[in-house]
Amino acid sequence: MNDFIYSYPTKVYFGNEATKKAFSSELKNMGNTVMLAYGCKSAKQNGVYNEIYDYLKDAGKEIVDFGGIMPNPTYKKVQEGAKLAREKQVDFILAVGGGLVIDCCKIISAQALCDKDIWEMEFKDHVFPSDFIPMGAIVTASGTGAEMNNGAVITNEDVNEKAGVWGAHVNFAILNPEYTMSLPEKQVISGAFDTLSHCMETYFGFPTEVNVSDEIAEVVMRNTIRNIRILKKDLYDKQARSELMWDSAMGENGILKIGKVTDFQAHQIEHQLGAYTDCNHGQGLSVIHPVLYRHIYGNSIDKFAGFASNVWQIPSEGKTQQELAEEGIEALADFIHEIGMPSTFTEMGIKDKTVLKKVADTCNLTAGCCKKLSREEILEILEECW
Ligand code: NZQ
Ligand code: ZN
Image (tube, rainbow, N blue to C red; front, side, top):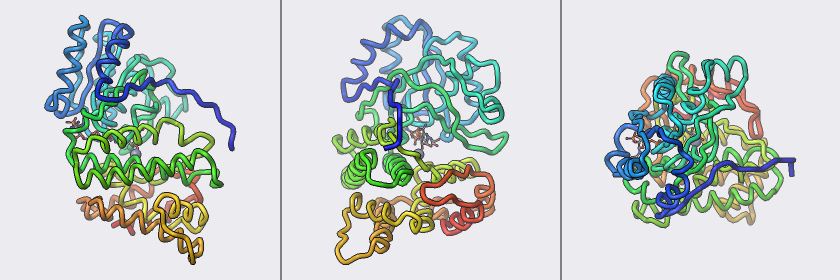
């Protein structure tokens, strides 16, 4: 195995009683003034906002309301939140929502205590924030695993970039599967597919020989696939919702990444697609993954064959490793079709084909899980996604 250091700063409260348990031990650490941050409308509609508001009010906290965080959260929204946090001298930030709210708050938490512009500081000076307003996350949509890491995906409209910015780790996360019950099917399935994508982007990274992190990833992938299928039959199956919520956290809590160099090339392409089209994250990934893998699997045939056998459980008898590897990628493509996720950008409703070149020219190029792609190859992949 590669050398590694493992420690984790986030305490997780999981289950139906999670909120009660979390607030009874965490309220005392929040200070007096708490920013309550949320998205556009769901938190108020499904009652989670009110529940959290009441806990804070009953504890005598000063509440600073910060709503309207949008899908693909913008850098302008981060600056608005940071300004408010400074003005109101916020002691603690509570993010109520999915990846978009949690991500926006991670950077608000850093920007509020930093005089420099965080975007410039990170991307031009390569300096990263070290002071943060402490924060907690109450997860209402799982999939991104955003509550388990300190990366935030923010869209800077001025420069047309959607990029990963480093911010705060959350001190604690509340994972109550009940809170996801009001999510519409499209978001439930695209969130779960995002989890599968995180596992794959880690699994196909280096090293490729059999190792414990990848064997755990295989189990998490199988579990995610099984539970997505259950939800396609019954969207309100609580057991499946709760397993997917933990799968999502497992994808990003570092355990699958121990000793691994991850790839995340599909994510880098999708993020730029999001910057130009404001598309749904999980849907963009479902289109990109099979096409990307058809392009690169030849450089890592054994790993892709292992993916076929151990994740999709495709029998290997009488097949070459190459045939098995190809069947695994096609099993992924068939699964995407089976669960009603899009397989082309046109199915996603993207109309302007000129964005493809812009995405290819501007997305981050990773070291690649088994092949470092050129911009020309990325454009080819994007055109096949059309
Ligand atoms: O804005 P509201 O009204 O709250 O509606 C949201 C939003 O429209 C809705 N929603 C959330 N919880 C709900 C609900 N609707 C009904 N009932 C509920 N309980 O769902 C919509 C999607 O919002 P959100 O849930 O935050 O999206 P998701 O969790 O898919 O996050 C997507 C963002 O996370 C970034 C993505 O790029 C994207 O910007 N990512 C962050 C990552 C990270 N920090 O580690 C990793 C991921 O790969 C991803 O890139
Ligand atoms: Zn993702």
